Amino acid sequence: MTNEQLISQYDQEFWTLVEDKGYTFRKARRILKKKYPSVCYDTQKDEWFIDGHVYYMENEK
Image 1 (tube, one colour):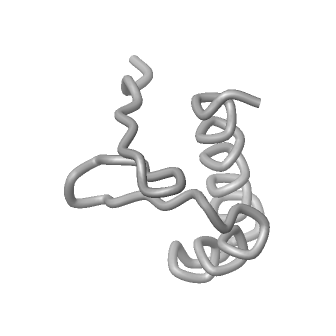
Image 2: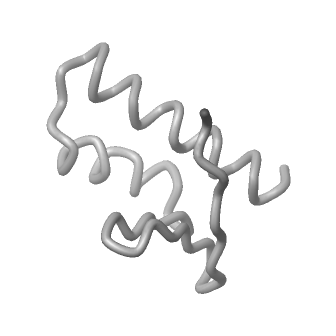
């Protein structure tokens, strides 16, 4: 799986937890941290980190 696919899958699961199951952002991140230990998102800088490498994703329009 490419890093872009990994980020996309993480993002999709995050919003499923938040919107469909009603979890808070913090709780959703904690749940996904167990499943995706190498993926991290910095909301202030809008950057994704995978194993210490920075990735920028295009916003969907």
